[in-house]
Image (cartoon, rainbow, N blue to C red; front, side, top):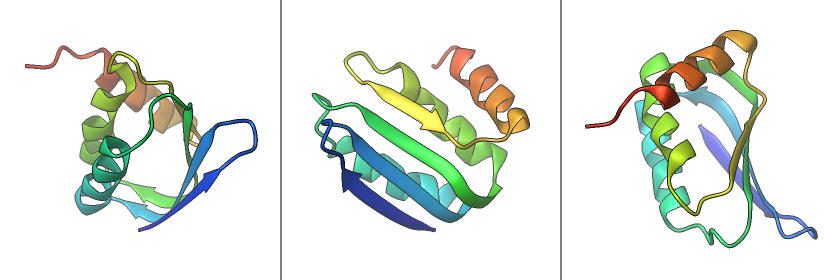
Length: 93
């Protein structure tokens, strides 16, 4: 997977993903998000991802509800949007 990060004029950080989203990819994305400046909104775009491993999507779902983070996920198919929403609602231990 390739990650392209761009900083928009509007103060947003655009993260575009390319290739396959699997366990290795989610680890790379977690590292990038851990270093992000959360004073700025972050938009993750999945439009160019050709394959999404459901467990990788589940691992990313925890990022959506971290207090103080303004994270938007775009470009998911309807099926993957439902999966992401379901995973994000599951209680974390």
